[in-house]
Image 1: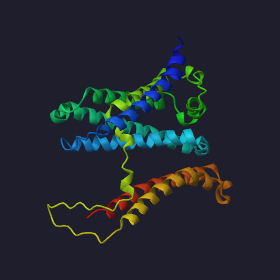
Image 2: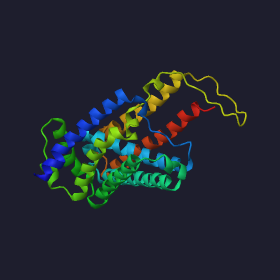
Image 3: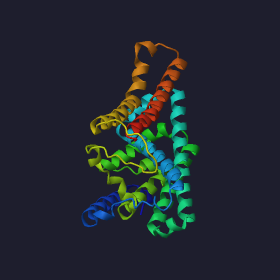
Length: 299
């Protein structure tokens, strides 16, 4: 049998079917097992550094992958200037290394903390190893085959869209490097194992929290002043505005700025500095905005 057909056509559909059917069955028949099975009570310090690094790194990278799949023109516009291309590649590489470092901390924690090791299942070890290799192959691809945000738009995006349209094109990946092919196959292995692991907690998002009143948690170790009443609607709106402004700004603002009459005829260096500065301002907005939103809910 043609290995390209097996790995890049048949296996993706089988893995997707297993993920959908298995997750649905587990949600219906074993709903209370759909949890992250948190071990925070057993050890906190290593969990904080590992979990924060891994989740933030992976979430941002996955978001970039999704944007490239849905709106690839965004990356085409952004990468028109070399400075922005280098900035995007460096940011993606840094996020990958950050996520990989978080995974190493989480793995070290499960091996060295006896209480955490006691509640670690075989599937936990398999998933942690699998995700580690998945992130590692992504980082190696970024190092060995640079500018993936450019060539990926002509290879990976058409391949994924061909799967979604039920017209798979294995030939797009047949000539790709082994590391890149491994990165793709590991994703579908991850997808097939999804319903059998604690990874299902990804889809158990408590959407009801968005509309419920804020709940104040009071620590009794010391007396602290209570914030004056901040309605749940106001706090929720602040969080939504931060996310919306960042999303719209990241996708629209750099291209709109470059196409404006003020910068359309400016030297390339000025355009690059303006675009890079816009990105840094948006990043600072998110950091300080999240900090501000956090303070509004603090006692």
